[in-house]
Image (cartoon, rainbow, N blue to C red; front, side):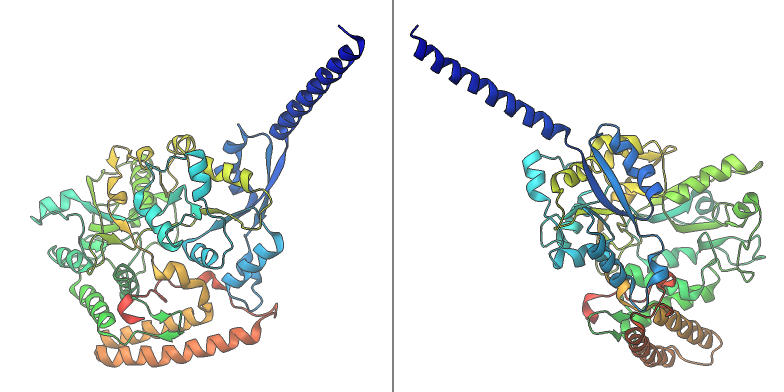
Length: 482
């Protein structure tokens, strides 16, 4: 071979080897590049216990920096919780956001989240097996697009004591009962006897006052006390009057567990279980969740002479105008990617994992009160089917999406007004119509004042606009009352 030609070939071959070597090196370096994801979560310890440790086993190149939201309520300085949360996000710029149903919808509308559909399509990520109703809900809030995924959710259902129904010859509950159905059924049980030992048709883990019964019924019906768009109290309607009347009549009938002593006030774990009327076989029906199943198991394991209950569960309660849906489902841990994140691929890798089958399989071994969105990994608990928690279509609840907009000072004042007016009705000192008009008028004054004070106190570290005492009924909205 000619010397010059040989030199040219040698140079070309050497160049190829160098290029190949560099390319291979880059690929290896890319794979081994470490990244740190900033994650918004309540505490660092809780994050690692729930998600971080199990993810890190096979993802050693990704570290986490946890931005804690713990104590955010304690430093509001005249702001709403929603405003304080937004400021924390803006200041820390986390890659991964942990959102509730309420701020998820807001962050989607404000363009602060990354759409996940392109990632899902690219990786052919399998969404089958995830509770379809939750995917539909997330898409509904995202304009038919997915901006977040939730590995767990909260759901409730109607629990009942089969033995009591058999003993008193009352037909068993069925799927899809409304509150009217439930209370009508509860009233078929006897109401005589001492309140410490008698049977009740309906109850809960704690005494149910009329105020609380109004709250949980209105929640299922999709009602609201305040329209968050107009900041107007909206109680003076026929729909609200029906709810108040139903709750007052139910309490008056004696079918509802509401002992005068206020229930459990402290003591041993055995005394706690003894105070739980449903666990002790004295309440025919209650609205429960996975914690209820855990309590039944713990009571059996803890109490010496405990008699296990033969429990049945049906879906409900449902909205009377839309019986295929429930407002008893919520998501408090929706993971989403910050639109400003420089680590979108790594963030997606994390979200993909914690919403995947491997993570669900690991977490299915324990029950912590929430349900897995991967349905096939949450089939039963101690032989009790969990299918009822997935039976209804979740509906966006106005209370969950707007509660942080309402000043907590108003919530407390408004609840006080409601309690006072209900007491006057029960004492026959006021009619329901009169009480509703008072709640409407005084409630609006209280809301207006709370909004004025909130605006005045913004930036004041000594102000006390703490949202930790939010009532669960203040701003639940129904379409016909907007």
